[in-house]
Image (cartoon, rainbow, N blue to C red; front, side, top):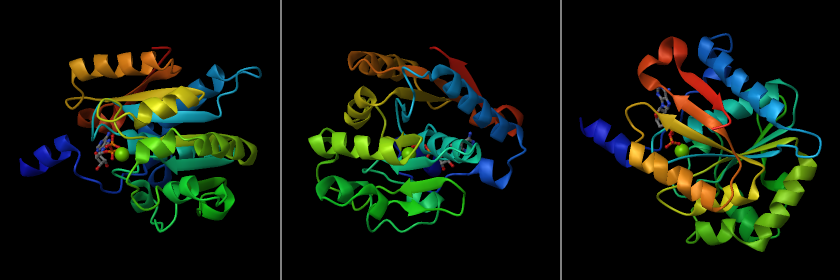
Length: 235
Ligand SMILES: Nc1ncnc2c1ncn2[C@@H]1O[C@H](COP(=O)(O)OP(=O)(O)O)[C@@H](O)[C@H]1O
Ligand SMILES: [Mg+2]
């Protein structure tokens, strides 16, 4: 019970399950590939989808799980991928991929360090990761800074796909800021965790910044065995 409450409050910042690596032929891994295909179809020559924000209304709904597994399946398809842990408040990506978090997004945004110096290559072909870096006092300001616009321009040159793992959109403004800058946003909803009112609020907040919501990932933990994820394109 205590554990459940802890998860609800989002204080848990554990590594997430990389099912696409551990069990690539599983139905859940296949669902991630379906999401990848849907994103690829939504991308066009005049409006390419290169920068993707992953967020949800509240904590513990599967944002980091979705962002990490999507990054793996995009890399598997031969695209150069950068996964960015832009949840500088509760970072988890460095744990999931067993990386150092000594430098990362916070360092790049507050110095003149380049992405290629700070990003870490992984054992997965085509997948580089920029961890969150040390917790800064002002995550929202960093994300909203002119330096972030330079960051995006540099990342677009170096990679085909850049995926941003964000904090919840209802709690803090970080995801809204990045959704307004990104080519597309994915909203994660988790069965028995996401609340209807906060979901409505999340959609409103994203709409307010004219985020292009590509779809909703339904992270269905209770039935994760064979139908963990659904993707509704165009919501
Ligand atoms: N479909 C799922 N089935 C089982 N556990 C899950 C599922 N999705 C997420 N989790 C677990 O729930 C916790 C929170 O997930 P996470 O992706 O870190 O959420 P968020 O980034 O939205 O806070 C993690 O421990 C993760 O491994
Ligand atoms: Mg997370």
